[in-house]
Image (cartoon, rainbow, N blue to C red):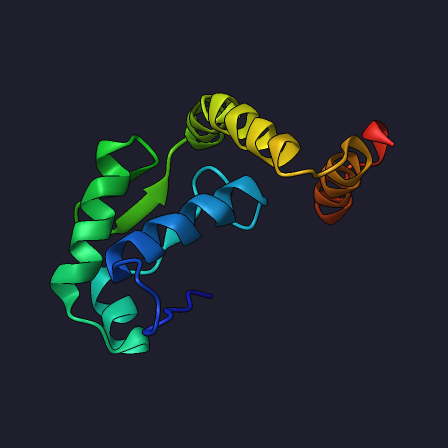
Length: 128
């Protein structure tokens, strides 16, 4: 389920956080889903358990997971809402990037095609 790119400049704990967020956004992990234990993920990925714990602590701080002593960590009921809200805040960054692309000569049609491709990857037919 989880994959770590050892050549990435992104720290391992951030890669784990990003993957959990992506799994929630794509519906792979739904509210109440249990995520792998620190120990099992550490063994599976050959990573120091402290690194996994750092990622899980940050996910808990963000309200995306909660832990049940003796049972493990689970996806919160409102994880999707939290992530949707965070992603919507990135629209300003996207607008700035689009402006820079326009200045660089990228056409409206190229940007629309790119946006359409993103919706197609998601499988969203209602935006066709």
